[in-house]
Amino acid sequence: GPASTAGAQATSVTRHILPNGMTVIVRENPTAPVVTASLQVRAGSRIETPDTAGITNFLVRTMIRGTARRSGTALAETAEALGGSLDASGEVESAEIRGEALARHWEDLLGLMAEVALEPSLLGEEIERERALILNQIKTRAETPFALSFDTLLHELYGNHPYAWQRLGLKSAVERLGRDELAAHYREVFRSARPVLAVSGQVRSEHVVRTA
Image (cartoon, rainbow, N blue to C red):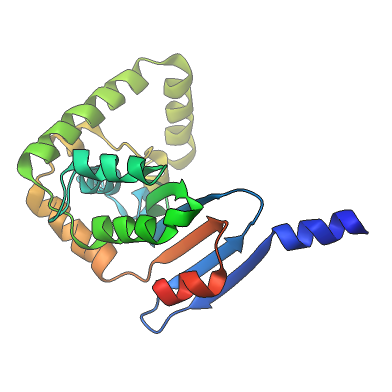
């Protein structure tokens, strides 16, 4: 009926694999003038060890604190000028850089995300700021009853397997990880991986593929 036809028109999903190995997934949705994007690579706590637990999240959080061209503040201000925001996190199975913007600025948004992925500065002072923030988050989590109960359950279920660690990592690891380790992890997961770019919103699939 008319309702199902409208739904089909509102949501069109395509998947393309580019010559460089990147997978591009586009969900066309003409109903709202916004675009959200997610760039993911295989990484996360599943490939970490007790000495590196939390390195993926630490890395991507530091990556959005500055590039070769812009400081972290400038990145945030640029994203805001596009009508959106920029964020990043490390998860169990992936590292993600994500953003949103008004639909008319989708190319600028993808350019900003590419800049973060390809040109992170990883400055020492920004590493230390992010380290302090993550250590405080780990401390807060350990003092929050529900989070502590959940983390305890994970340890009981998975023992010494990396799945037992939540994405913030272990305090002992985050305290000692330095720029050399972060830079090596960056080369391993961003330079050698085949990323997945997912874009959703008021945008044409063929335009995204051509730009990516």
